[in-house]
Length: 447
Image (cartoon, rainbow, N blue to C red; front, side):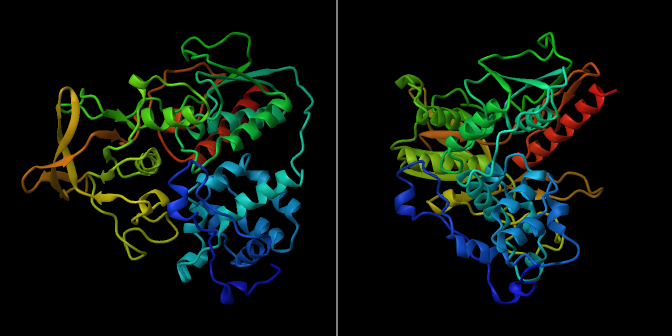
């Protein structure tokens, strides 16, 4: 390492967010960037720790010690080459990854100040684009073709890997553009869609064909391909089948998030189909990242208030949970930029019913619950406590996750990856599984 003792004298410095009063009025990315000097200084904190738990924790097997060292020494091109060896699209993960590597960083264990790997990754990649380090590859074709069904992070990763190996790759997607949940789930204030467009343009220049607006039935795959990658994600959101679900104003989270991203892209949505929180008291049911994205979107649409409720207990604060030791990803309370923008958060609440007037939702009836352990160590049992109460809501957004799809038995030349194979998970895990599926397809086609 260039400076093996930097971690002793230099503290973690994050770029931080744009001022709250500024960012809630637009959908521009909320995260700021450090200047080049400060970014290299932060990279110097990555120490020669012997056993790199960051590498172990990353589903892609990224090597932060190597590219952080190159960044610290000012060799941005080498840093990008090292990063891109394991990560096909670091401009995506550099913005939306929860940074499992940072949670497993030795500095997180000893100082609770891990290396800024995610921000470094994003900075390296943006520098690479700006300095034209990213060049178009023209792989020699091997005469075989592969169809990729789904243009989300798993499908794009598989397509990229197979294309670089010389296969003629065609990507099919039911939406009007590529990206999957990167485009139609994650808000622009976390990932500007021009970042996706830039990468898709590169993939097209390298020979990948994209066909949009084609909803492929996996039981009737398009003919003429030597292998198939199924990367259709988890299209079915978990619903809440309780009285009042049919009331106007109760929506699945993606109905709002996907529509807002389409509006920002220029889509014309009729007033009667518009899912907009302007002037409304919004209730978000679900405490995960999707729920957080709903909060931030509601603020930018001009809501009156936002309340987020979760049926599970409040996670512990800080780093003191003995049941969840380092280097595992910590199950601790997470406060996002959207939460900072204003939100009432409550836990251990079960939703009993929605009530309304003239066919429109006006409130949700909820009840506090407790979770009791069972003797055999199985799933805790939910028990109601106290009396039901009412939460006022003109709009309810259901952000309770997605149902893992059940896949049929496919032919031996069909490979399933990403959320379609494993259920809803992280973008970085989808990309890693897309890489796995591409390797398996390559081995099959070389037999």
